[in-house]
Image (cartoon, rainbow, N blue to C red):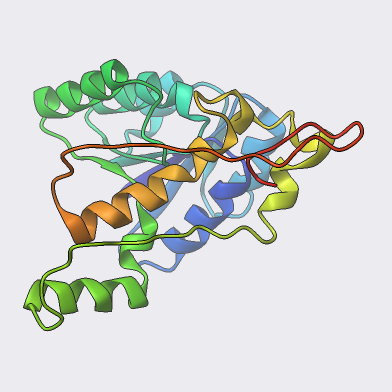
Length: 217
């Protein structure tokens, strides 16, 4: 299988590492608007070519699958472009920023007969896989309540403080927490099934000095 990476930010390093551990797979290209970043990642893979334009990559490399690792507001257009070229698309979470965009992505996958996947990685953690097996087997009985948490340690420094305010996650609908929220949602859905109603409450720390309040407080 021939695979290309689109978007060479921090998360791309994790995808690159995981792909390199698989047999029968070739990373043929990297793509980023910043040619330096694209070149950095291409240099880590023997035979990979760096691009700044997805159209050129698709035409020249003809990948079987494309990992879309850019900010969420670009996922739909890039994934659809890849799928229309006949490639399967794996997109980072959040899948996109609107229902309309998500529906366009799904329609393109069905029309082209390719796979569209969202990287809901925690579903495959050994602890979560074991818990899902216990629930599916009925060994622990019926699940009627799930309480989930998402903790930040090293990740917090990339989003907090004045410098972190320039991160694209702050421009998401709902703010930076929207970048983490999918983890909580897909894990709850895995254990609860169909959700009939949703209610939300947010809390922020009070502003202190020149530091603005944040939902990472």
